[in-house]
Image (cartoon, rainbow over all chains, first blue to last red; front, side, top):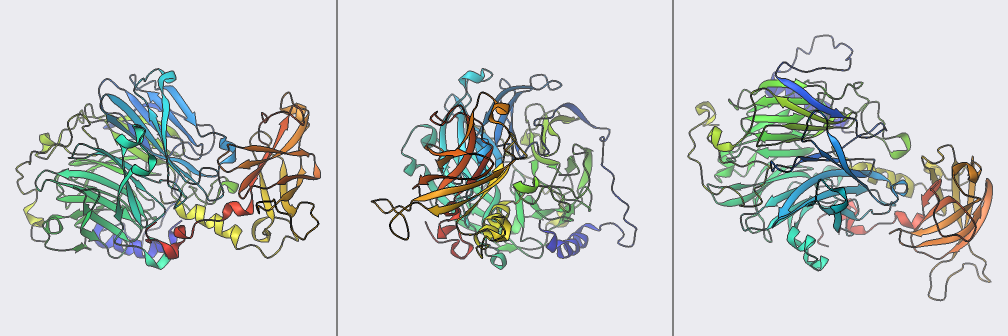
Length: 465
Length: 168
């Protein structure tokens, strides 16, 4: 849907990535199948009967809770699978918005689990269109403590945001260093909203749930919009700050949200090709970052944040490297388990690359999950089945990685739930790589790791950039 | 994925297409009193549309005592199968449904062709057609057609791109 930006994007991509010979004939692209030697599919479930199976995915992290949550996308549902046997995922719960046939929109988009005290919860975000019921619904919160017994799963709250209908596209559940569990949500405005989840699930007056906002400092004025698309929140044990890494229309921005009621802007990433900013994930120590921009032919970009984190510059505009699975396509979401980056790469399925040398990303493996026709992705409206003949937005949409055993899950828009493994990646703890043990995975019992790690230069060559 | 523009795009295509309804309430010909009705998986071959007309009144417009507009709904449908083919049903009924789906107001019977039912005095509502066991039964049957009242497409100015960033 953003193909008009492709020429600029391609120039940007080739300038940093040294892409393929532009004089070579481009062959017709057959559906891609199979995987590389080190990456294996352990299990696969076709989650829905229609053309579109899933949006994002969430994997619980406690060893005693082998549950994965699949956001049902335009099926408007949430499915929970027990994957104690990865080869045979068992659907144990399915919840659909009431009267789904009356709803219109892209539906169940993003999911995050969280824990408060001894109770586990799951927040399913929704997006319904103007004119549809629940156009102001952002998320439905479930108490999932009683899993695997589905009769014990209950809806405990719904978050509405009526001042900007359109729901929550992406969300992030964060165990703040002050002890609160916060929920960051995109809205159809130039800001992100911060909720205190203890208030949400605790029955507090809904007018008290929202505790803060993070403005988008880089609105994309050319199209009159400027909302966030996605974000990551992480603790910086060196500066003792909670930091928000936001991607939105116009670029990327980093905020100090140590006091979430009053976020402070730190720096931005803007420049050619960065306007359709989609995802922004830092390394555990915040020195590097991986960003995604959402248009065909664009690579993931790698940034050195050192000078910006130190306050020496207020904006970055030149990445130090880039990576792409296939320049014909587009890589989507990613999870960083430094130095590995796990990518749900749309038509290119699961892709894994590493940043052992951040200036020279190296592909470690892949597994194709889409098996789909190139450029026949998601687009249009409900009336044409959301079918496009130009979009590459199909295939691996969401990804998550379980830290205690290295299990990988993919939600594929075309084929459903995949459970995968990469040989040699059997767990992740940042300390094993000289990094803080910080990732998208939250330690809800203890909060973020606050002890700084003594870091040696990763790559002296980049230090002067 | 960035898809918020899709929803806004569809809304805009309907809102700006108010030039007239002579060719039927589809796409750019959708008028300000027209409702496009969508089929569902229960009966995917059904087609339909609806138009709001002021309910009977000695005046030019019909309103309730507290000022809400009162409309009849002129439903045009084709391809409705026999209600019995969908379950223990005998007739099709049109409903006006509040946007939170909490209130279902029975408007009257619907058949293939044109049926005028009503009145409805909700500000924003959905029109739903479903097979039911009788004309007086509570709503129970599967939806075969549904659409949104034109007022349902109205939105807060704060969501308009020109007003992004203004504190709510």
